[in-house]
Image (cartoon, rainbow, N blue to C red; front, side, top):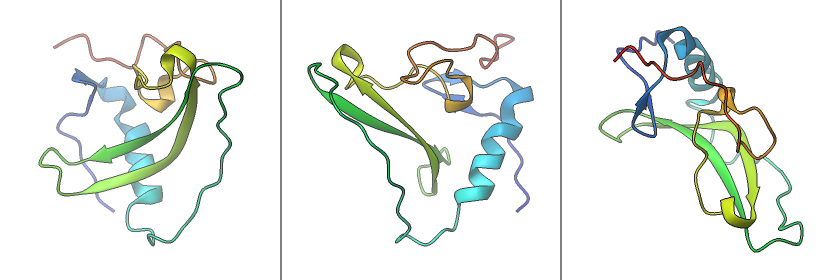
Length: 108
């Protein structure tokens, strides 16, 4: 699959060009898979209010094509219904409440 990114955005923030290969790998390993494939994971409240299971999805700008990655994160309590603030490859802990600082392209 010949993928080339002109730009990549997460949460309205540009992804650093040196990280595009990580997004490309996700697309190459999941795009075109049969829709009946299952991925099992556990996500419980851990005695907190609420639990949210988040999955990273790569989409084209026009929203016509989506690649659902294998990456998921369980967020509980106050974070349950808030999307992670960084791409999966930049998460520094299990609930992705801490992110590496080098994923965002700050040159723009």
